[in-house]
Image 1 (cartoon, rainbow, N blue to C red):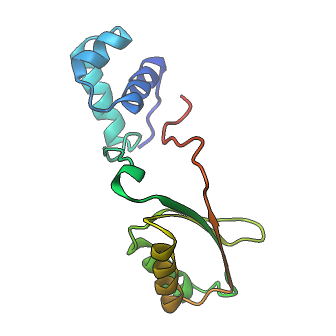
Image 2 (image 1 turned 90 degrees about the vertical axis):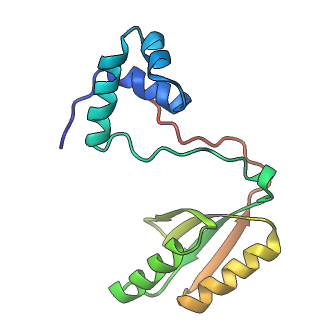
Length: 153
């Protein structure tokens, strides 16, 4: 289902990205509309898949997840069976916050959030016991400078 979004839709999306806990009344007031049209537009964008799952952003460090590793993976395996096992292994591990298949010398990059280096090693050992990889490089993030899930509307 293709839906065309206009400037009002973009204002609604920007408001939701800033704070999805806002009431419809607040969003409508801030964009210069009324509640019912805002609700109808949100409903239309949800049905079209433009608006997905709503969640809460948690402070990882406050919850004890102080280490963020970016894991670069090279593999010599590219068949469907290996890919299926690899994707299954990634999806079953909550430490993996993001996984991307790349073009170029590196096949995959993972963003892995854990309590510390020992917890990363436990993750690493479990991963390589399930799937064969050619080379793994783990980069520890020293400081998160910017992190957002907001799109530049």
